Length: 128
Figure 1 (cartoon, rainbow, N blue to C red):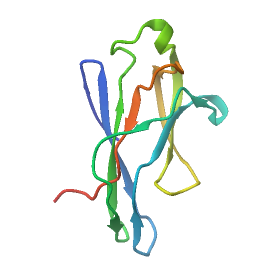
Figure 2: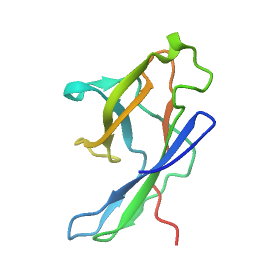
Figure 3: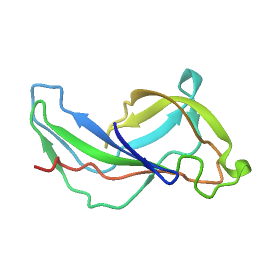
Figure 4: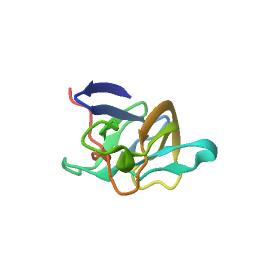
């Protein structure tokens, strides 16, 4: 993750790397949610946002990325809506996969179920 923070907004780029010895493709959006103890989801999962969906071809060692956004618990939510909660990390499902990855990240986030502070963009090829 490469973070950028400002005015109550947190943006980061999730980078996926092909660690196999074969070329593969990715298309669509990752699934992302915060998790607490024992891998239990906390709050709503990320909604899909902007961008153009395209198939990205990854050679061995190649990468694709996706923009992750969190409203950081400060952006216009009341404490009752936000329900600020500690998280242990992110559960990330690469597009079209059923097995999740876990990214450790001790942080606090809005876990209120009446709001949707997270969003995720489609995977894209790296820019040259």
